[in-house]
Length: 611
Image (cartoon, rainbow, N blue to C red; front, side, top):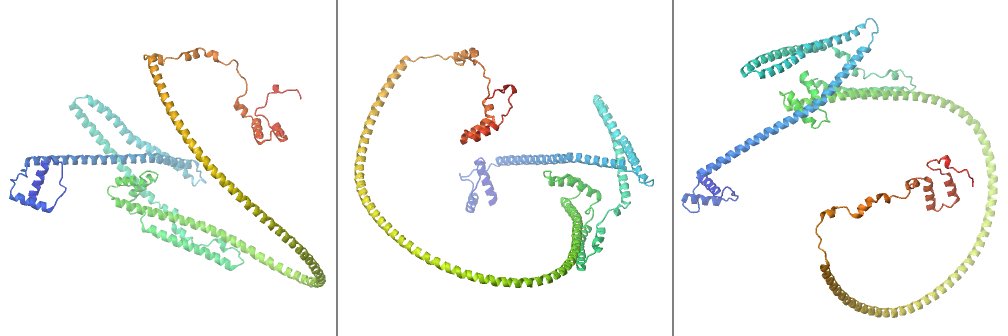
């Protein structure tokens, strides 16, 4: 009961206010008071009776407006969906338009390469002359393709042209005859479609038979597999095994290095092969679906904007029975398989490269070991020869040492006598230097005493002069203050006089301007507007145009321009020398005489006179 009363009251209030405002404040006490008032009676003058018909009309109008709004939103969503679909289709067409020429070009290149191969091959003997049957087989395929085109495509094109003609003729007939005419056209189209369906079915069966025939040829055995690579991994190069090494430990270490490297790469390849064996070749899909998936992924490369979204949209269109999660999972498996195959190829290449490098280093090491062994033998022979030479030299050395000892004793005696004489000489020189130093000290002391007396006398004179100057400066400062005060008073009086003169001058100027303005008003001319005269040519301009031929120069000048004069290198060099102050030197004369002009002068301008 309370909820119904509150709803009626709210509706009546909104109707009274014209649906312009909304109740934003609500309290539980107000609702309880309102229920009590409604139970006691609605005869109070504060409330009006509810207008149910008007409220129902408003509700119907609001409901109809909401329905219209929903329909509009639905149409907008449909239009947006259609726009998005058309945009996706347009982007798909752009990708296909870019992919189609590339495929055609690849097809043409493959056909050209195959044709060149068939033209260039020559049989080595009479047994393999059957290679030329490939050319005949290619020509037979071309003839079959042309026959197939005439049997399938040309009838369709002829039917299309005939249908266009018959439809045009049928439009000219009455309505009843036109409908009968259309029934015949439909039957003919249906017959052609059935014929084309049979042809397509036969082509699919032929394609499957050809694929099974290719699989039955067992061509996989002609391709190198990773198992063959693993078989040859543990083989040490014959160059290392058959090498003649004077150090057996070195050869054994090289063989172990090859075996350890092969073992490390074997473990890596085994792990990659196990990863490949865990996944199917087609990642759990049939071969046709997987090939179509690969082709779509190759079309949408990373240089295309939004390639990821476009690729997923095209895959969902091609495989409507598969969910997006299944497509993403298949893509992940395919990427993992490709990555594993790439790793397998890279590991094989790395193993080959490392094997070549290790073999090269091993051969170099073996060659260095041979050279080192030969050097050791040569060193042993040289050492024996040196020992013999050393025995002979040892005897000579003993004789030389005895002679050197005797020479050293004599030199020591001579050096002792020379040291005693040098000590005596140094003692005499030190006594002489001490006497000279005492004389110099006395002279220096006398000099400093004289200098100190002069400084004291100078300081005394400077203090007396400073006292005299301070008294004079104080007297001058007092006079300057009096003079400044006098000047300030005079300046103030002059400023007052100039102000009075300026006021008097302004009053006279104002009176003069008033008189001039009165005179201007008396003699002013009132001219009428004449736009023709304002836009016409002036007399001066007309006379200048008429007398233009008289304003030409009296004669023409045939001389050099400023650009030609400045471009001469002799002028620029002379200017630089003049700025440096060297234009009158002998160096400037030699430099200017060696510089040639840009253009060689004519022979008729050269003078034959010699000055």
